[in-house]
Length: 318
Ligand SMILES: Nc1ncnc2c1ncn2[C@@H]1O[C@H](COP(=O)(O)OP(=O)(O)OP(=O)(O)O)[C@@H](O)[C@H]1O
Image (cartoon, rainbow, N blue to C red; front, top):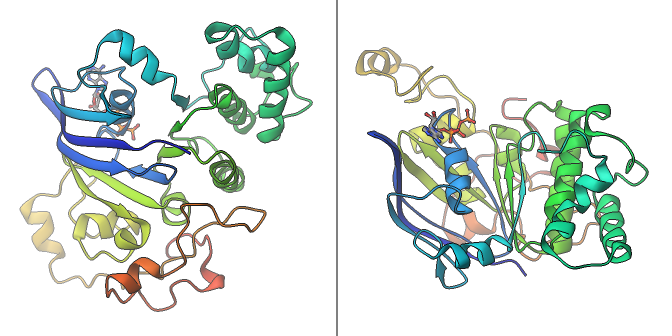
């Protein structure tokens, strides 16, 4: 059913460089969350901290009653079994075929017989649409297939939490759309908690139940998709609509002169909120909310044209 991750007052520095501070959020069980942020704001550091690969300086990360920021190595080892991670490049062993790559965690962490391993590997290969490619080496397949193979491997231990580190990096828009559909279908099927780090604004607008935005060493906002897509908060608005006008500059924050120069520029109106991408079998996911529900419940008028079928999956400004 997926498990909740409760992050409280988390801070992480390397030496004197604060990456982010005071990060507080709850990633709800079974829901899909996307974490956005300009390059270098520490999204990957956040993922690594969640699985205990990096220790925060301050704060807690509670998963099933254990604080993984302060627990023993032994407890961390147990908690890590709840996670499946899809690394950016799929992180395949180059000399092993896809079958052995996907089987690897089962052979490492379980005492399953080879016939049990085979049944699980083939089931997960089928789930990600790679049946028939078992004998291929990672170097012989496309980047999109490598990501799907990485996803099959992330799923073999039946994780309760799946972390995706930029699943769409290096993929063309069509492959990204297929991968996003796969992510939605998987969430419907296995009901685990999903956290996706991405730069892709279209993915962020259409896939998740919740969106977070890391900016300038803190969590600028975290909440339901409709909350962020209807937000007038300058950083959130600029990032989610991929605009140049706003506080985010080319490398970091814009300075006072740059902001003053923009002061008389009208911001374009917020684009319509697109429909959320649905499972391909048409059966809603457990955590899926009806379109416009959050806006109605919170008395927020969404931008005109929101939630119309013609807006499903359109890139902002398209
Ligand atoms: N092990 C480390 N030691 C020191 N500094 C690190 C370490 N890991 C990351 N950093 C620094 O932390 C900052 C955030 O890096 P991170 O890779 O998390 O950013 P990001 O938001 O994922 O970026 P991108 O979107 O470009 O992938 C960078 O300045 C990076 O140099």
